Amino acid sequence: MKYHVIVYGCQMNISDAERVSAVLEGLNYKRTPEMNDASLIVVVMCSVRQSAVDRILGLGKKFQKVREMNPKFKSILTGCFLKKDIKKLEKIFDEIINIKDIGKLAKSFKNTRDYLEIEATTTQGPTAYVPIMTGCNNFCAYCVVPYTRGREISRPAKEIILQIKKLVKDGFKEIWLLGQNVNSYKDPSTGSGQTIKFPELLKMVSKIPGNFWIRFTSSHPKDFSDNLVDVMALGGKITPYLNLPVQAGDDEILRRMNRPYTVAQYKSLVKKARKKIPNICLSTDIIVGFPGETKKRFENSKKLFEEIKFDMAYISEYSPRPGTAASKMKDNVSHKEKTKRKYELNEILKKTALENNKKYIGRSVEALMTQKSHKEFYIGKTKEYKTINIKSNKTLIGKFVKAKITGATSWGISGKII
Image (cartoon, rainbow, N blue to C red; front, top):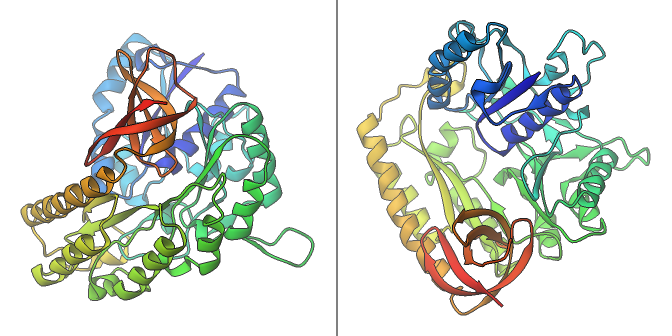
């Protein structure tokens, strides 16, 4: 029996898919890259944005074609989804399973395990994703995660360390620690009466022998501590990259979003991080067109982008999700205006990112090469998480290389091996 997995979402959903694969391969399924060759298709979704739901609803016709070729074909949906979407999704999928219950993927798998207890089948080249927690307690006004994944549950540090040791032994070079809010990680199961928090966990992982890098996502500004900055500043395996979602550049919009910090506090965090880690690469997430975001309030987001000079930003247009606090607010920014605001922020980002990337020209960097783009060109990431393009007649995938930077664009740098 063969299975095919489709992922719509972020790194956490990729990790979800790896756990799905672990369960299925324990049931003697073999993975296939071809949808038409599969007797089982599992879709792992993220319903944070309506657009993802719409794309999944469009799979119905594709599934019908597969079913015509294979009458025994079955489709399963898991991941993050809202109850209000289930009626529509039931018309497409044979079964819908909460991600926390993926141990129930088959009736023969009766001894079910909790989500975090399932060891993933990692398939992402030199990169491995390791969830350290699941769920969220923050209830941001626009977000469905507390409703789809539940409240925060942290994984015991001992289990995390054992898994990473195995991954490093198996040759993985880049370890991502994942959580809806890694900064709120707490492991009370040490038996010593002391709680291991995220900075301590990060230090523990960095002491694991081997040649690998450590990254993490996502961080909430309200829990981003001075202690974490100090640990990141130690360097070594801990990479100088930080994704710190701001979500809005205006205090009133942050209040409406239920984001308990101010723009000034966010700037202070960035200042501390850049002072302690001068080569840090900073990315953010931001939503444009949130209810109540007037043109004047949006101008504050533009000012923030111009001042912070982000290396990268993931810019989203607000879309209401039923069940969230924001869904009760009037969606009073037009789609046209949201698109315009997204474009304006992106133009600022292109300028500042290019300025930042040009500073690398002439410098030597270390990079982990992850894929071949075309002919003799390879793509990878520097330690600072800059996308790098290198030409080589040797196979570079999964290898650390040193390169001298010769060129830069807004979205990456290029260089030659030294």
